[in-house]
Amino acid sequence: MFDLFVQGLHIAITPENFLLMAIGTILGIIFSSIPGLTFSTALILLLPMTFGLSPVAAISVLLGVFAGGMTGGSIPATLLGIPGNPSAAATVIDGYMLTKKGLGGKALGMSIYSSVFGGVVSLIILIAVAPLIAKIALTFGPGELFMLVIFGLSTIVGLTEGSVIKSIIACLLGLLMCTVGLDPVMGLQRFTFGFAPLMTGIGIMPIMIGAFAIPEIINTFLTSKKTKGVIAKRKVEGIKASFPTWKEQKQTFRLNMEASILGTLVGAVPGAGGPISAFLGYNLAKSRNPKCGTGEIDGVVGPEAANNGVTGGAMITLLTLGIPADSAAAIILGAFLIHGIVPGPLLFKENGGMAYAIFISMLIINFMVLVIQFFGMKLFIKVLDVPKINLMAFILSVTIIGSFAANVNYADILIMFVMGVLAWFMKRNGFSIIPLILGLVLGGSIEDNFRKAMVLSGGQLDIFFNSPVSVIFLILSILMITSPLIRPFYRKAINLVLKKA
Image (cartoon, rainbow, N blue to C red; front, side):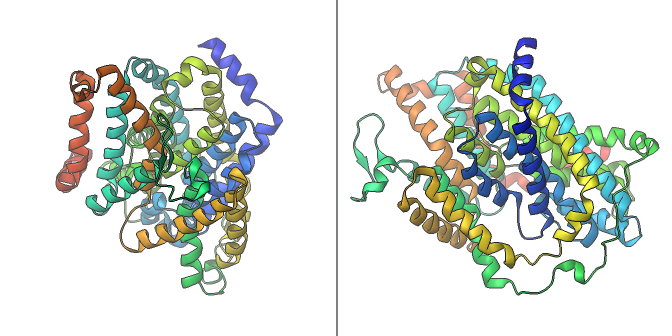
């Protein structure tokens, strides 16, 4: 393990990586600071720019966006009462109340501190458990791996807000897209309709760019007016983040630790993600301090530590099992695949140095978040005053260039726009695009493991039911798909447990 750590240190500690991590962190904070934009958009814009980078450098800049984006949403949430991203929605409750009391700087400082606290704790858990999970996963055969991926997709479908039927349809659409092109075994054409560019399949890059960026652009042009930013209405320029005192750090240590662990566990569950984690963290804080909701610092600590604990949790399932837990992890998985690396248990066996380089990069990024947020707060507050529509022309240009650059193929630009319009239509009609993206990303793994299992068993389907591990994943998959029926009951149970804890 020490050898891998030293190897990872040599890979991660380079001037290029430091610069890229800082750029990613700043972009993540900025995109999350502008209500209506998301750091997923920043991830998508940066993804095509990572082609010429080393794998660790590419992953590092995206992890910077991920970590910066998770914490950046607290800036408008605290100062304006408008969450910069869904994960910051719980922070609004007490954060904005503190600002109205004249304690906005204190609330900002504690939100940054708790965010970094959650990120570091989740990273420690990631380093501790990831190699163990990878070792266990190495014992899985194709039958178990097939059921594992099915379980991952089922979890996404079951935990995605809204209709489970619509989530299943979106997931199946993603799986269908994955089959376009040449059959990997027989070499037969599938769903190409005589269109030559589809012979190589539908690329991940144009689909992701279209799904995440184009709906944002369409909505902005349909609804936005060229008005001044939100700060023009609420003067908050003079507020500065104040670092928590040693006394405040000691008083909030237990809540920070508990919320961080809770966030890590939630983050490791595919489909759960930051918003669920943040509200569970808030409920935990309220169980400790019933005054939360009236402008208490605990009401900022709980959700911020929990939603940033998601970063390490999401990387647990991604690095060890190759299953992304949320949209950000799916984009990072896309970066792995673009660079010819398949995350999963073999990553630790064949490329352990790279895995530890990612761990080290995540640690550095967390401290960069701390420094950049405190010293750059004046800049991030001014960013709130930028009309979002002014950014859209730039974002549209980058999406077109990024789609083309993936394969130097004009057809990918068309695919990107078609996917973007489809994603916009889906969102308008209550469909989530996350199951679609994960269906596309994981579809190849499903087909590959299914075919291997069929070869090993001589075409007998009982290979998926002979192994206890496969049966467990099958049962869990059924429970996940049916979970919306019992969701109100287990949410009440979780809240009851948190209140009694």
